[in-house]
Image: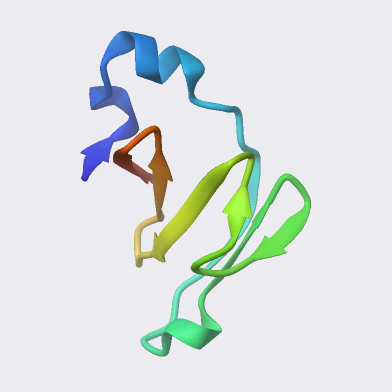
Length: 72
């Protein structure tokens, strides 16, 4: 897992823009959710061709170009 700012510059430049408006974390993974770009999403969903691997207490872990990216 890498923080978004630690990605190689070329990868970071290709990282799509995402507007997060809601973040819900719960111990029960089925209750975790985010709202990104106006869409309610859960772990396992896709946003802008990225897989939402995990919704954590502090943010989201996205799979992007074979990287796991932590987005606060």
